[in-house]
Length: 334
Figure 1 (spheres, rainbow, N blue to C red):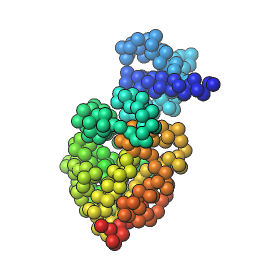
Figure 2 (figure 1 turned 90 degrees about the horizontal axis):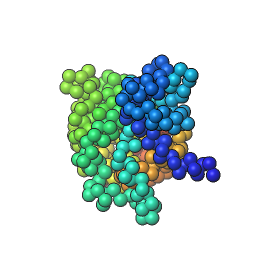
Figure 3 (figure 1 turned 135 degrees about the vertical axis):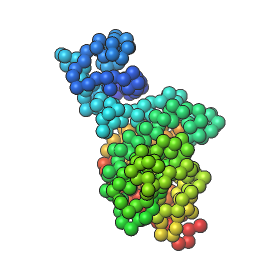
């Protein structure tokens, strides 16, 4: 009974988390304890409601309270923008206003077997996002940089780039992962390819005056239409989670742009091998509703690679959350 009562009101915790980040509680609370009254004055918010908000979050281990006032916990520190492993913008991204519009449509998706974003909004999710929700687009780009910052070192250690001259990071956002790979591999050249809004403000290291400018190019492009560059390695990191047909299209477009000896590398979170299964299954449902996509199983993503006409060469862990799948282009690929 307790589980059902708590689960039915889980959105209250989500809303409290978003509100705390939006009004600035994590960034305002420093190393010293602060009372509710002190925080409320600094943030210019209502002290009584702030206390109720913090009381809710404490039940999840986000902030705690001592005799001297509120203090950070390991979880709440990750909501600070200056934390090296910050998840501030990821939390904002998955709680954006559009998510609250989509969740009630889950019943329809269950009944019909698919998400209905495009028919209800008149465009696919990312087209609508960039066109109608520019503030949310900015949150998305920052959230992807956060995730890349957390995983880029592990990706750089896992990928064997010996002898590779050019790597294209497809859908690489602002290019944090690409910049890390270039720093780790001095002979490597890189190309960042993503939608115009994503590459408008790339990682400073990749810009014309950046430290990696001589080995980096930034190109606007849509991998669902064309991959506009020839490369030795095509990297797809955490983006092939839309519909199956779109995933196959993106992979085939990369293969068409490449050479017979080019490699295609997918970095993804496999839903059947996740230490955070509640997170993995939750984001899987969100992907269903916004892009008609999914979090893949190992068997499922392998089948999509083969459906695209590619050959799976290996699957292995990147870290506790991510896996790398490598594919090659068969000589008879059409």
